[in-house]
Structure formats: structure tokens, C-alpha cells
Image 1: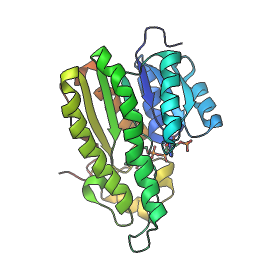
Image 2 (image 1 turned 60 degrees about the vertical axis):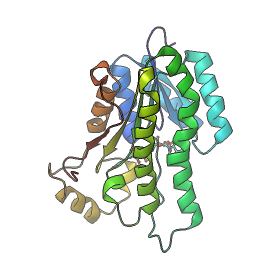
Image 3 (image 1 turned 30 degrees about the vertical axis):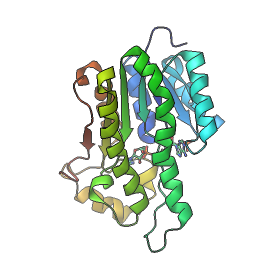
Length: 244
Ligand code: NAP
């Protein structure tokens, strides 16, 4: 039960950065609804959060299921006033070899998925005249990265989406920000060869790979009262891998 806690919806809470964000927000006193793509994953999220929240199944590509999931969350727990659009996918390839499915799969999940999920949640935040939306971008949305034209395009798009939505919703007391992680130790980066991981660490001013908790701490700040006057921003959490 959510009792009188604010409800936070965190996508991709089963692993990596999303899991750390869910734990952080629950520790900060929110009731967290964390998503996974499978029923087993949703159960694991619920077990992990215990009294701090619950888990639900969500696949961002599935338009009708996204609407049904939002309606179900609203009727069971109430309207989420905090939304963390964390889930994201990669399908890396050089553009010369990139298939239409690799392109559209990433755009559909990372960019259109955010549209699908954010839109039906706005009414509840507007009614409350309070809301916090945080979208996960990436350092490659700014830097670019060979082999990731599809992924980088979605992340740059997310930042434009964030700035636009911030302007639409500011008068309603809703802030919209992006967080752009650098090189963070999760399943997404564990796919890289050790030599590539080492090269990324060497380019990072702080000389280490980031942790999911490094990112979660910034998301926790942005959804709290201390960030009430920050909107339309992208906060970089990259250890000095890139500045600009
Ligand atoms: P991750 O470890 O690969 O975890 C991805 C999460 O998203 C999982 O919970 C997964 O659920 C969920 N997910 C995957 N496909 C989905 C879909 N189609 N619909 C809904 N949920 C889906 O990712 P991560 O490294 O934590 O990254 C989290 C976010 O940070 C992403 O937006 C990523 O682009 C961004 N980011 C990461 C890094 C990095 O270095 N790791 C750097 C910059 C930006 P299942 O467990 O059910 O598969």
C-alpha cells in the first residue's frame, strides 16, 4: 500500500541504474512502482523494494499495454507524481551496416516509449499542481559515439523533449529534467571488451567507472524539494569524461 507516500514510477527498475534509482527513492520515503519487462522481473523488483514499493511488467514498445499499465497503477496506488524514464536499450552497429530494425527498435523503446508513458501521467501531476519528471539521457547524446547513431539520436532527442516539456509544464509546478550518465558499471557496459572499458576509464577525469548509485543520487536530488527551481536542465554524471 502506498498510504500517504508520493508515488514514483521508475522504468527499468530490475537492473543497473534503474534498480539503484528505485532503491534510492524508496529510501527517501517515496512509494516506488518499478518496472521490468517480464513477470519474474516484476516479482524480483517487488521483493527487492519490500515495503518501499512494488513491481509491474512494462514493455515500452507495447502501446496499448503502456496505457493499461498506467490505468492499473493509478487505480491500485494513485497517480504517480514522480516519473523516472530510465529504461533504455542499445542495438549497436555502424550506420553502413545498421538494419532498419536496429534503428527503429531503439527509437521505439527509447524515444517513442517516453512519449507513450509520460503523456497519460501528466493529468495526475497537473491536477496535483506538483510533479517531477526525470529522463535518462547519455553522454553520447552530446559526444556522439561510433556505432551508436541510433542510440545517440534518441538520447539527444530526449534532451530536446525534456526542454520542451519543461516549458509546457512549468506553470503547473511540474519540473522536467534529464540526467546524462557517462560510463557506468551495468549490464549495458559489461558487454564491452575489457580493453574498451579500460580506454573509457582512462578518458574519465576521475579515473574510475561510475556506479549506478552515483546516478541515483542525482535523480534523488532532482525529484526532491531541493531541486524545485531546476527545470529543462540536463545534469551530466560522467566523472569528467566529457564537459561542454
Ligand atoms: P540495463 O542495465 O541494460 O537495464 C535496462 C533496464 O531497462 C532493465 O530494467 C530492463 O528490464 C529495462 N528494459 C529494457 N528494455 C525495455 C523495454 N523495451 N521496455 C521497458 N523496459 C525495458 O541499463 P542501464 O545501464 O541501467 O541504463 C539505464 C538507463 O541509463 C538507460 O536509459 C541507458 O540508456 C542510460 N545510460 C546508461 C549508461 C551506462 O553506462 N550504463 C550510460 C549512459 C546512459 P529487464 O531487466 O526486464 O530486461
